[in-house]
Image 1 (cartoon, rainbow, N blue to C red):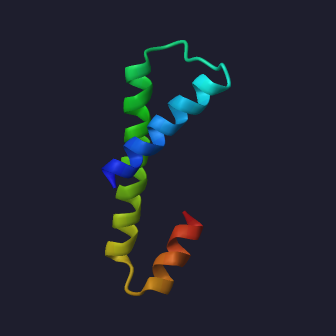
Image 2: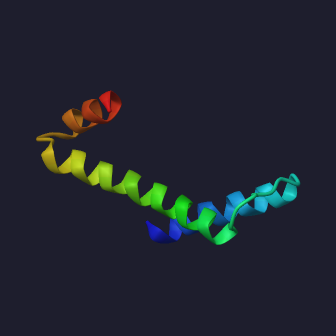
Length: 65
């Protein structure tokens, strides 16, 4: 999962450079924020799957959150 998040964050950097966009702040901080957002999504998914008795229930909880 971490490798995919790093790949996606790198893809965002490449696309912003390709289209001539730039960040006013630190690129390192921007990269860390992207990774933290990805990890929070993973954490929410793990939490939902831990408290849900079935896969269908997990899908319903995800759609309601």
